Length: 332
Image (cartoon, rainbow, N blue to C red):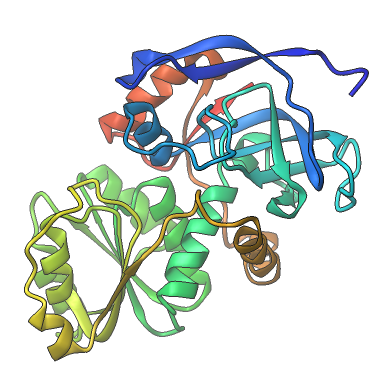
């Protein structure tokens, strides 16, 4: 730590509110604790939970940084006691519990992964949180099997575009819902079998039509609200609906008889509050199951746009416009 600066630029949330509350400020460079590594950040991914935290609806878990930012790429520049997985100078990408919107960021060594060969640091920063979200929810909770059909709401988002590629690499059929023809085209180009513009088509009817009235075996939903009851209609017998967000609201009045009649499973999860051990187990599984897909060229983040760290407010405005296709990343 002797050669590192004592201060760094970070983007903090000055108060709950719109993108304008994201303000650059000076913070002390953090010191790694036991089994932690300090990363000199090259780039940081922008995700919906960052927007929720900024608005005041998603506070950081106890012990986490109050700075937004859940995934980074960069160079290891300091090691905490007992940290042996990486050495100084290694290039890594990592899930973090917060603090990514900064020039330096801490992470537990078990949550970091080597930057894949052929990935830029910007692409690497767009990868960890999304990979872990999709892996856990689609494959571990949803139990997607080869030959099954996955319905993804928000198919052109960072999560959605990653889920398309991972499901296709796994041998599944993919249906997505999006809000424009440009987004339909982007998802089909990535490998989706069917793209539904929810503004002009009924996703329930279309899903049934393209599955010979069987329905989707797994549904990845970030909308909630009135989609919940409609998901029950679109699901196959023994279908699994996995909730990862509630952009349409967390309250609904679905007909729960459909759960019984179809023997459905409706589950969900959040990633940020999970234990160090839980996240480490996900990283281990991803290293074994998903990184080979990356090495084979079957999986790479679709990039929408980049913004300098100090213009994080513009990145949030871009995300909230819902015009983006793929990942938004801050460069440091």
